[in-house]
Image (cartoon, rainbow, N blue to C red; front, side, top):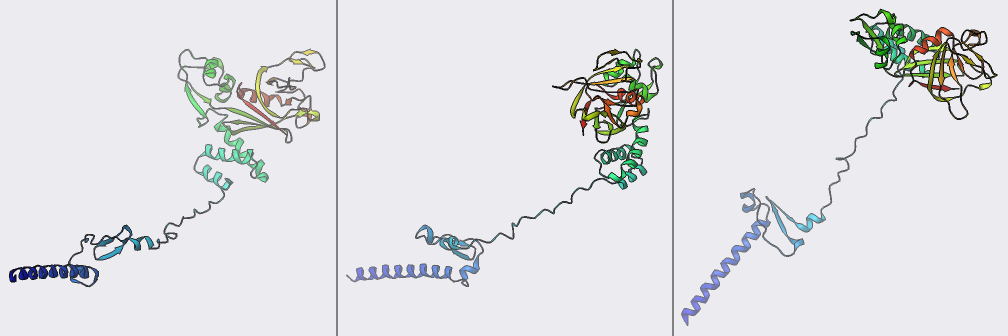
Length: 328
């Protein structure tokens, strides 16, 4: 009996010691300044799990409850992620004559010409239109109307068997224009000759109000001419295509009669550039005149009149894909 009592006492003492040891561990973990906290910086294992929201999570020396994590207010990141407002860009200013002057001093004639072209065509500096036009014409004497190489053109070396018309067709230009800017004749081609060939698309802008026709190449100014237009606003407005081109045209009078070139009644002058017909619009064109005094007035039957020397020059530039825009 005594032996049984001693055994039970021993078991009780062992159980009591185990209980006290376990409590010491929990107390140590819960006291921030305890030895257990100071011993290691490693994460401690989860000690107690009641429910999901009561899970105790140990991070180094810090104890955090999952319900506290849920309740913890979120950090206000408004300032941290505040969008950066882009500075409002300054309105792009139109190019000025100062830039043109700078380019000219640097020998950049092509760039200067292009800026002047924008200024002139868009009338950005109305009070300087005359000055800008004079400078444009001077620059284009070299860039367009001479055999000097320029970005508007390609330089072609004449090969054996070449003829002017074939070269012109290959580069979608007119042999008359090749002769004009290179000061050549069709019979003066020699193997090895260098020919300047203007490349790109031509366009014509006609202003009925200003009585002007402006020729463009690749949307850049080439030259402007004075014109005559239709009386009683007969010249139509809109965008037109080229129908045909004729030298020394015959005039078919709307009042009847056919008058060949050179006839006193033929008023068409030396060149005719016909416009493609549209519904209720047919028979219109750009032509020379035997009445140069009518230039700058509204006196034709609806066609656009030009001085013969001007229409001859324009004729050399115009191809069948030239766009013609007539405005009021």
